[in-house]
Amino acid sequence: MENNNIFKTGVRIFRPSEVKAIISVIPKADYKDKFEALLFTGMRYNELRWLYKHKDRFTGETIRIPSFKQKAKHKERYVRLNTNGKRAVDHFLRSKKNLPLRDGWNANLRRWCSLAKIESKGVSTKTTRKTWESWLATMYPDKTPFIFLSQGHIDAVSVEFYMMLPFTEQDKKEMDSFTSGWM
Figure (cartoon, rainbow, N blue to C red):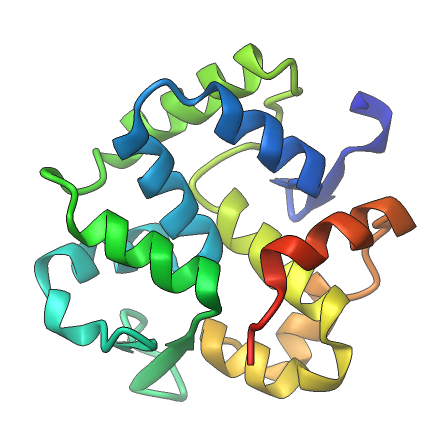
């Protein structure tokens, strides 16, 4: 599948079949929870690390987080979650440990890609975030303002980066089980 890989600004975006393959090879349930929390929230790595220390910001339905960017137009945002996201965040927040340092997580991602026989070029802590936003924009094109605000982006940035990606019809069918119920 190497020739069909999707990249945006050098960062790899996964297809649903690749996410399934990666989840199947992650050896520890705790790390599966962490991976799924990153994927199903679309949060930045440092934001999810922050959430672990501020568990009260998860209402069971949404996550209220401050902006970590000084130039951000919005000083706070609500991350919308579907059933998969709520479950993943709940499991992540019950973990005994927070996410590891960024370099350790990147090494884990590369190892899991190798085990799943997936090319790891461009895979990083940004991959799950870009994957999730791409999937949501593909599956809910009529909800893009909500998606982009939930992700902490403005429309112009997200339209350029996350829409019109070369997902196949099979990808879209498989995305449905991941994204269903988001809104």
